[in-house]
Length: 118
Image (tube, rainbow, N blue to C red; front, side):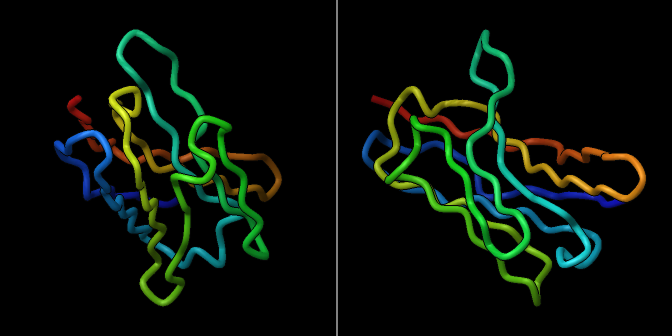
């Protein structure tokens, strides 16, 4: 199991930047993949960015070139740097950890609100 705690959300004007942090309760070396998802008002939760072993990253088309996922293994922390924010980026952002042993388990943080004003 792993507990995830997000921080860094807030209110920002369009064009601004925010950095989200997700601290894991165990070494992220032991986690198969970590990522960020978001849930916009009235929408289903969607993938934003993921990072798997070897630093392989994947981004939603809507955030490519604007968002960057990274990690600090010594701090068991994954970041999401969000630049050139748009009002449509307004959502609750969730950190995800996927651990695959015999079965695959997904773990989620509590979410952090990001609001982008126009």
